[in-house]
Image 1 (cartoon, rainbow, N blue to C red):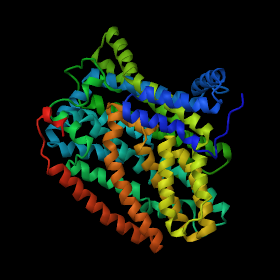
Image 2 (image 1 turned 180 degrees about the vertical axis):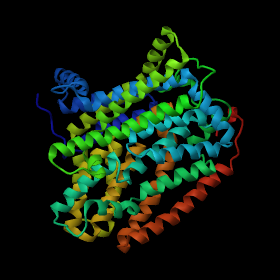
Image 3 (image 1 turned 90 degrees about the horizontal axis):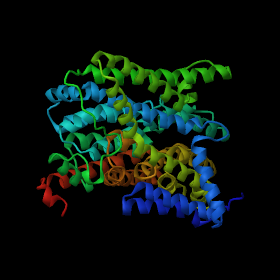
Image 4 (image 1 turned 90 degrees about the vertical axis):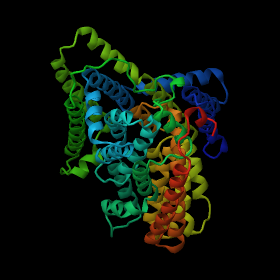
Length: 530
């Protein structure tokens, strides 16, 4: 079956546009993803119904089986199921309740519960998937106790996970990006700086990531609530942590807990999960280095690690450890079965969304949406001073439309390198950094992004509620970054660009503080009419 090519056509934008607009308008994620998949499939098969059905069947099958087991997706789904079961067992043991009681005695304020969540997000920097799910399960009992909405928790998780990973060399993201940078430097015969040095140098130039983290800290410390987040926070203060009219969000469980649980019933299983996953990341990377005959190094291990395998290995160890520890509570067979069933069921909504998102991403890849957007930039003749800003905007649009920051890195980083080499070699690092920043920004805004979906799951928040409440914060920081990249390009100074963004950031925080502080919480029955 031959597919129609749309690499030079605006029609390549139609499928992601349908999915994103419908998701925002209808707030029905599965329906919206399905509409985007169907639209793209019809375009690719020239509206041949039989070929469309064949293409759809193949697309969904390849999520699970593509000339063999598709471990890249199946293992992520398996990890989600294991995490759901671990979470349920922790709840049954009373560990989550005990942690909430313990934290309530020590963390006295809403701001404190939010800051602790942000701190956990910074500490667990090894991978964004793992960060989102682990921090959500650790922080949720605490933020629930202090009446912080699940939408706010999802924002704290999502806007910490990717920004931390994208500026950390020793992470799955950092290793991937360093490898891409290395190939770009070699391609353009740049030998005066190494790939790791270039990555570190680019950290303060990654304006979106740096200031997104800064805003998360300010939001947690000052309890800043703007836009739709205000409504969710008012509901939470009235006892409604999420929109109950939409049902129980992914990650939630409905099973009673033991009154004899201790804090260690939560801490030790999560600690075992973190240690086992980190060790697995290093081990799988070390095995890859060994096979290639390369000497072992921590950075090299992270660069060559198999993330999905490591997540499953870590999840198995975490699940086994949790199950063994649960034997102390002498649970009946019925409770064990119920815990496993409820834990699996709690993750099914997220699994359905993730599968649909993966299929849509493949459809978008076949439409060559990313290549079309990249081609628009590459073919244009633009003043080199505007290139960092252009790279930021286009990378943001690409990540938003395709739902993948890693895919955006893979397409846009080489293009940015080529354009810098042709126009002004001194703009190489700022342009590469602006691609990283734009990709994370687009990923944060996109309802079809897998990391955004997993952040919703980790927080047990309705997905579109998370997308809509995070938008004002993400767009605000994007404006801060836009000012910085414009100044950076015009002045040819990364330091000046950073200072410009710093001034803009202070202004943004003052604005958000005014919007949060000048509008005191109103009764819930008036909150929805603002």
